[in-house]
Length: 434
Image 1 (cartoon, rainbow, N blue to C red):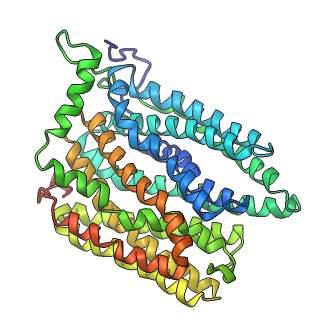
Image 2: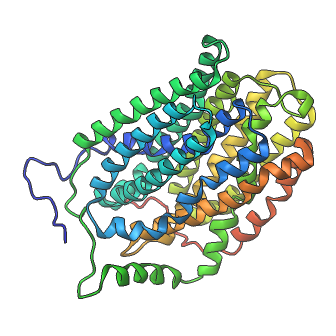
Image 3: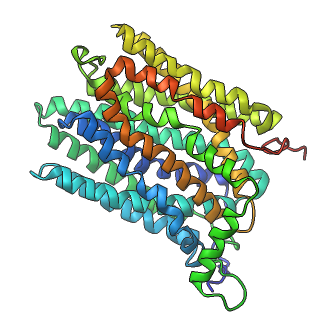
């Protein structure tokens, strides 16, 4: 068993502002690249909506199946080791995408690299979330839940906002050489992520509790692995838990895959005809800022009254703003300001409503194996995004944008149903008096 670090020159604690912010910024970058930036890139490189939704939804798979190896992250090495190691691999993967984009078989090669990046990112998520729970006391975890969400959202602004704007400008400066423009964009990403890897190597604390977790006795690692899963699936109301994790975002899982293609497609195809840079502003910057503000407000209100009090308002505020895309697809407004406002309202609602989902996962994961059990929850979360997302492109191309967004509104019904099935402690999430 790996022992706690005892070296006096290594800090067991460090100001959370020095590392929680950068850790969750780094956690967000590869996810937004694989899930969102890849959609915009493939759209610009000429793929159909059906192919984009299908291929990029398959990239969710590592996040779906990460519970299969999350116990091994618990059982071998420290969470700190896994965090820094995976950041190194992700930086190399980002550089590899830049190398393969100019090649004739760029689609096959880039998808393969994205898969490797997704596996490294999923492992990084397991370790980072576990490290967060080990390096901070419980009251600090509650205090910084909004901070970690904010910097995760800032990573999304950087990924699908600033970098997409950069790619759009490079498309102009390279006189339409799209592979070169996107390759340069990924070189910038690789350099950024390498800096985070080096920073965290030096700045992350060495909490005494961050060690390989092995059960006492003679159990083999394989037996212990299965025990962790058995304990999770024996949780009370497990069917309702799984239904909530899979279906709460059923509508959003379909919507999110088609937002960028809808904004980019010409008006004759039912889209809004925005440029790459304009999409970076609307969806990647204004939208993510609204998403972040929604998440911060949601976290603050839950800390005042508890998750149970705010669950139903969050369910409604998550789903009702999807009507903004019904309006945009029906009216196809010319006003850039109006488009920004509609997207911002939908994203604010998503950020506010997603707070309930994240805190519910934390509540479900409480217990001895919180790192592995939280990873299992996030695996079901990813499955709930992956399966609807895979079909969304084909549904949109069959229905057209106008009817597709009406279908999204109908798809919000399961989210309301599963919210009525779950049970939440009335005190969970509420800030306690010191």
